[in-house]
Length: 554
Image (cartoon, rainbow, N blue to C red; front, side, top):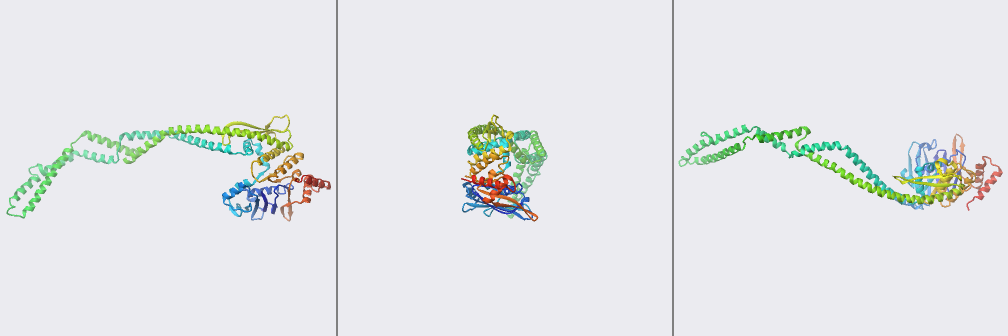
């Protein structure tokens, strides 16, 4: 629970230390005294958004520190998860707001982010302000209220797990269909590319080989003539080289017996003769193998032109074109198989839709059972809160699947006998809204372990007996939850175990708000003031005293 609140330089509050009781704490004061500042201070330590203009004029910063004791198990688990140490089952939460913008948050003097503060704050305090009545005016929030009352979140969590999978599958399917539609032109291009290149059965570096063959065939006549003439010079003519060498060989053989130095030279001539004969033979073979074949020449010329045309068209080398065709074929294959993937996803989506619908039906049935208990409990509370003829109904219909199920929930009410229940937003008055919201808070409080409830002007629009009933109900809730209540109603204030006065004073040129703990005499004077205004009579003071004694907690 919130045990103590320290406020420094927050708006018109210069310095205040507020000690709180574990049961019902009432804050009263004249209009404009600064009761809203107190709520702003609590919101600050709960991680809510604040602005720098809340800092007291002339101060560098505002500081709000809250001491929480008797920590719930959920809070302890969260602190352990965050690695924040605590002792004696208590923590301090501090928020410093700088005048030049920005703020610093601390938990047990350890720096913390505002988001951590907010997450922890939701486990420590629940604040109900007048704006919370708008929940009742918004039917789309009624499902949330019903679930809070039910307390069992397993049905909703189970449903949402399947619903998220269904959403992911649907998004993926939609993306694939759009991609398939946008790729139609791409498929046409790829198919044309593959149809043009694949049938040619191109090979790597084929263009280099073709260029060599083409050049050779184009010059084949000159090549053959050169080969044949060269061979004739070596061996086929009477005046050829070999013929001359044969003559030289004959002459030298005749003198070997008389001149031995010529023998090695003769051997060399014989060797040259053999080599030249071999060369002449190969030249003849080359010439015969290069017979001019017009058909071969035309085929090579045609293929060369096709390949060069492709290289020019795609502005790439032959090997790059071959790789491009292979990549295009693979991409085309994947695109053609996307239809199969889409069909598979469609089957998966249909299955998920069936499973999600079943989960939604179970959630719907659970909420139907919850609605029956909800009507019974809220009706009981409203009758106690001086709405004896109230009829409350939960209009519960099936609709489209959404993140919250297939349920359409709206609270209907009839506050007067004989009237048909209608939407709360159309018929409930301000006072009725306050009591309905208090009834909801009462029945929902049984389902959570948030230790502190704050009610800001819960009695707006009510008076007399209804206000008294609200006070009794707040006192009842404070038996198992700490309650802080900002009120202008004496019927509520007299129920408090701890009464604090928010009072504005002026000193020189500055205005300051003080928060005072009232003793019995102080409470008598404040209750009398609320009932009759300033300077209450002795009779009014006596009435106030009797009310305080009469409503003292038993």
